[in-house]
Image (cartoon, rainbow, N blue to C red; front, top):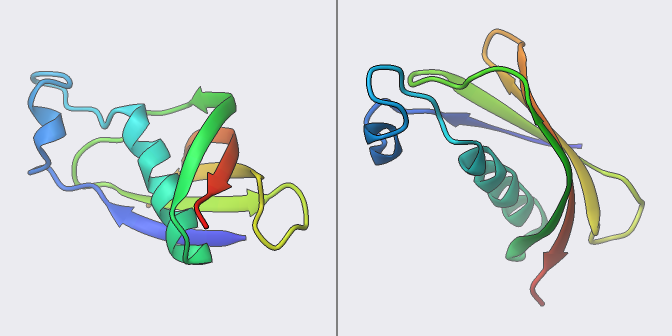
Amino acid sequence: MTTKSYAVSAEQPVFVGHFPGNPILPGVLLLAFARKTLTETYGRPCRIRRIVRQKFLAPVVPSQTVQVECVPTESERLPTEVACRFVNQDGVLVAKADLVIEFSL
């Protein structure tokens, strides 16, 4: 399992229109956190080829921390499928995703 935490800053420009008066982190940024976690773990650029399943369970708001947990679903040196969980600092599961990924050589 690979785990990394990301602080969600209120100053991020993404909050300017998403949503005015009630800022919520877009789900695509959670996927970007997963991609970055995998890239740093395996030392190769990673790209998400397909989202097999994804579920958003709770909003992520400014000033929260999100922990990304990625678990390969097969035992290859460079995985092609991972299950990711996104948990906030209070231990609440905010999202989960099963992804097909590929690494650049």
